[in-house]
Image (cartoon, rainbow, N blue to C red):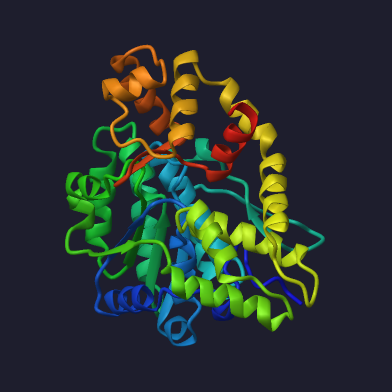
Amino acid sequence: MLNPFVVGDYLSQEYFCGRSNEAKVLEECIREGKNVVLHSARRLGKNHLIEHVFHKASFKEEFGCLCVDAGVCGSLKEFAFFLVDGIFRSLRNDHESFEKLAGLCRRLGLSMTMDPSSEVVSHSFSLRSIREPEKIIEEFFSFLESFDKKVVLAIDGFEKLASFREVDGLSALGKIIESHSSVRMIFSVYETQGSSIQFLEKYGVVFRSSGLIHLGPIEFSEYCSFARSKFQKAGKRISAEIFESIYSKFSGGTGPIQLVLNRLFAETPKNGSVTTEILDNVINSIVEEYSVFYKEALSGLSFNQKCLVFAVAKDGAVENPSSSEFVNRHSLASVSSVQSSARALLEQGIFYKDASGLRIDDDFFKEWLRKEYF
């Protein structure tokens, strides 16, 4: 039996929990011709929600659906590369569209190669091949507009575009998006510091007239029913109390919860029940698997940054890390040192900030810190 707690790519509606209202709003916005800003904290399933809507048969009949990952972009040139790469990967199995794409790539000097044995085409251009990023982005948006169907382009990690090295990079992209309004856009934005609304206001040229959808954790009762039903279908059991302890430990975060449920499902024998011992073993094994990466991450931090990481891991969430009480209680260097360390750790993605305060971004990293040092 396939493990029903999917980790990684979206599979089908059968393995997707909840989000019926968000999916309905997202689909309605697209059908009404609106772009959408989908924003949430990390690991709450933005990409799976998009894929869930994209996989609906009626939606696929009406729209061409493409996804591009912009999460590592730092310049307009890099965005142009990942846009072309994403479109290339999305269309490689669509023969008619791919032929047109290949012609456009050749015209723009973006080379491709074919494996003679498999006849699989792959692109052989690199970041250095992108010499006129604005022109390339413009040409590819025009290409998307030429489709028989309306095209929906989802850009994951769109907040990274705020770090463009070009002063007017995002403004240039915004103008291109505005001038190709028949391409529906889904801007997937991760709330890096709980400030998505400030981000939207600052870069309003891109998001003007977009619908806003905020993704919070899946409701406990809905997620609990989903999990228990999947265990029950396989002749296994997980109690509401055990699920609640998982949900609480990971603050409703879909990513870590799915990973734990996936491992629990595999470790629980048929006709068996999840016990606290099995749960502890599963979490410890996940932490141990990633320990080499956690050690490396910790070793790259300065002394003051390490001290702040330990302090935040101990407290769980810190509402005001600049307070004298917090600084003195954890024997930190100074308020100014904490402020500069916090900024650096937020930028590195080790911390994130939400309504409850400053937190360790990776829950398993926090577990590892507590296991190793407290």
